[in-house]
Amino acid sequence: RKGLRPDDLATLFTFHAADEVDRANMASVRAAALVMGEALLRCCPPCADRSAALRKVREALMTANAAIMLDGK
Image (cartoon, rainbow, N blue to C red; front, side, top):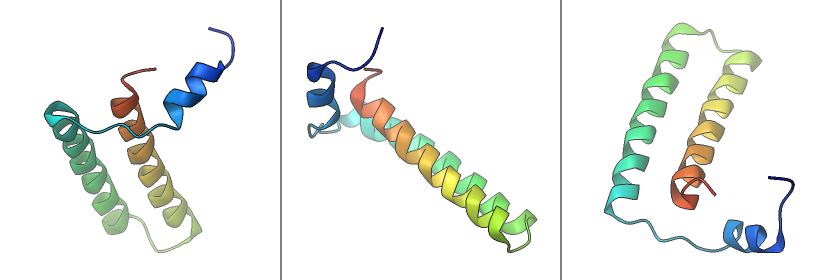
């Protein structure tokens, strides 16, 4: 696949309502992200790197949710 097409953009910028399976999948990913975030707070000293790590976990969660809602598109 080479680049985004206009139809791809429409899919990316359209609201996608979560069904029961999507909500369950997002809850699982959210729970895993929470565990990771808690481990970072517990194990890493307060510093810029810990802040960056937490931000990246949040970014991973949001990107995973997008993958779920876009169904791999």
